[in-house]
Length: 171
Image (tube, rainbow, N blue to C red; front, side, top):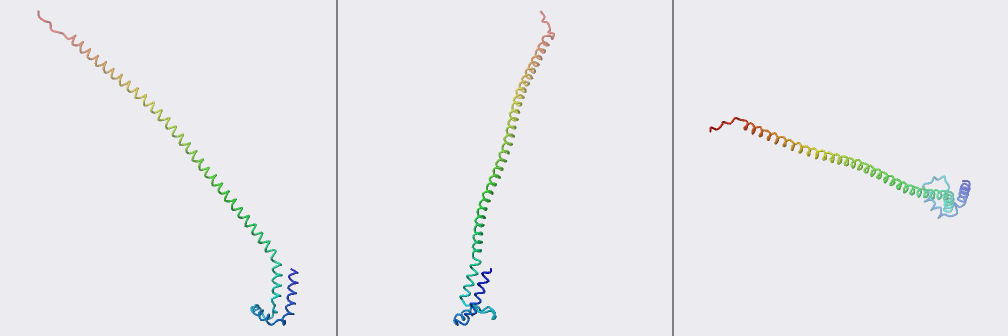
């Protein structure tokens, strides 16, 4: 900062020595210094130029370093955003895999349920087949018993007819 102060002091000294020097330059400075209070000495263009160059040379390296740092930060942010997007896509894939695993486990559950229902249906079919056969055998036995009872009645009727007294024939 001392360098800026020295150059500022030099610029003020040179401005006071060159005030009466150039009338045309004074007119152009009046236009530039229009908003300045009257108690400030007017500056010529070389002084303004030197002050500007001093100010720029003093702050420009820091600004350029800041600009480079900001660019580097921006690039790092872009890299971080890309990495973050990749990680998010990996998590989405993991979630979809979990969803797929849930679907597979659900499918396995229902497959087992279907297998059990099929076994029950086969078992019920076998039982009904056995029951039908048994019912058919029972029906056949019942028919045979009914037939035997009917034959037994017929025999008894026949026997009763034979046991019935017959009038003797007169000879």
